[in-house]
Image 1 (tube, rainbow, N blue to C red):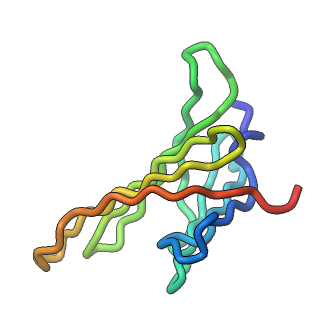
Image 2 (cartoon, rainbow, N blue to C red):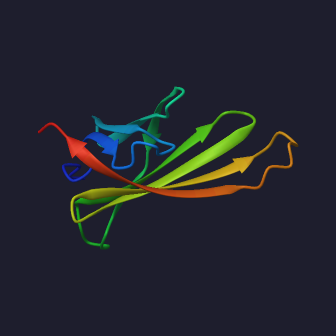
Length: 112
C-alpha cells in the first residue's frame, strides 16, 4: 500500500490540544504510529491502514490502539486536504466513574 499521504511528523494545530504530536513511519508493508501528549510519550504501535476506495492502493486513514490499563484509547485518523484529522476515543476501565471521552483534533505535517 502507498503510505505517502500518511507518513511524516504531524503536529497539532492547537497548542493546547490533548495530543501534541503523531509520528507515522513505515514498517515493512504497514505503518507504525507514535503519539505524544503534553505529559508523556505513549509509545509506538502498529496501525492498520485503510484506503478511501475498495480498489485503491493508497492509504488515507489508520487506526491505532493504546492500552494503559486504566484506560484504552483508539485513534482513528484520515487525511483531508493535507490535514490529519484525528479522533481519540477514550474508555476508562478503572472504576473511577469517569465518562468515556471523544476528542477530535487537527494536525499539520512538519518537514518534507
